[in-house]
Length: 188
Image (cartoon, rainbow, N blue to C red; front, side, top):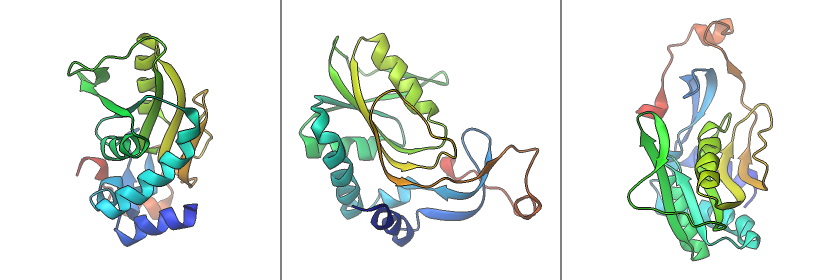
């Protein structure tokens, strides 16, 4: 799947939004990828999952870990297509943790799969959890990398869409963006 084909899925499903958005980081942006809108359609999930699975397959992992909520659907689909175990980390007291009886064995060969990154904070938190359990992180798969500055996780990282999207601190908005009402779509 080419980046253009992946972006077309987002356009067709209404998951690529344009306007004035407040990101999880607190930064503001003109574009937003609402992955949940694309991932509610199982044919889109299968196509995007296959494209990521094909890129991650050579790493020979045994487990896929996804940060909840965003990475759950695509992480499970990548694991299904690769025939791997799937687990997730989730928020507890504002921090990602491993719960629900999930375990990571020392040297367990792991992939992280996430829907979208801007600065990579949730992937970094997931990496810390994997390392704390002495798992072996082999790679990261992302549907959308919207970082304006390249994010280095220290392992092979694959994305289906790489689109540098301008972000602005809340106190330094350009006039055209400041004139629009701001939305925080990640929570809606």
